[in-house]
Image (cartoon, rainbow, N blue to C red; front, side, top):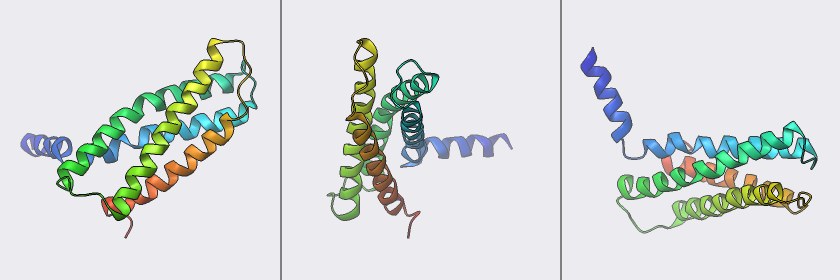
Length: 149
């Protein structure tokens, strides 16, 4: 019994792309929740919703890096570092730009919280474009992993 549990844990940790599949859900959920809280706060800096948005966007920005690293490792380990083309290239590009927008959204909120400035109006298009790119990256990632056929 103990050996099978250890084997399962070893398989989970050493599987070629399992870490990316698990870790990617954190920045996605945190960013989308942060954007929802930001939209609900309607730009009021001192509301609880604005604080919740900032916390979610901050943790999303922190968890983007491990998601990117594990995605690159999955490409190297599961696909042997083959030349990127087609859906894999599209997934990488969408995910990279989405990651930039996650960090940019956090930076906009961080910069605003450090000063007395009102929240920038352009943050909403940046956040919504981030959600669109995350959705595209997630959908194409499903094809890369074999979940979407």
